[in-house]
Image (cartoon, rainbow, N blue to C red; front, side):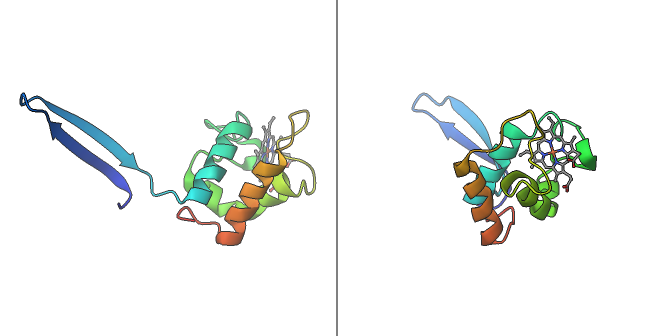
Length: 110
Ligand code: HEC
């Protein structure tokens, strides 16, 4: 299904109708993981309007545009770890998920 809002209407045997609007975000499985990781680890500094280091990751496009810096800071800890200390670093599994997304082409659809 293409990205966008999709409306599904169902009618039961009594004629009652129900409507469900399902937003298909167009995320690939690997980007979904990365979006989830960023939402979990990178706030409030880079989320909900936060602009630490001049970086805000509210928009998916911003995550895509900064894929190399996200990998450098959150996976390779270069030049220093993100999330910034004293926050905990990503788990090895979460680092691997970012690496997998980068290697797949670092797109929203990957
Ligand atoms: C507790 C606040 C905090 C959290 C949480 C945090 N950061 Fe940062 N981030 C900063 C600060 C402060 C700077 C600016 C100083 C610096 O670059 O070290 C920064 C800068 C950055 C930069 C820009 C500098 C560069 O090297 O390109 C990137 C990219 C970045 N962070 C990625 C992330 C990612 C990805 C996460 C989540 C996995 C994250 N940060 C979590 C505080 C935070």
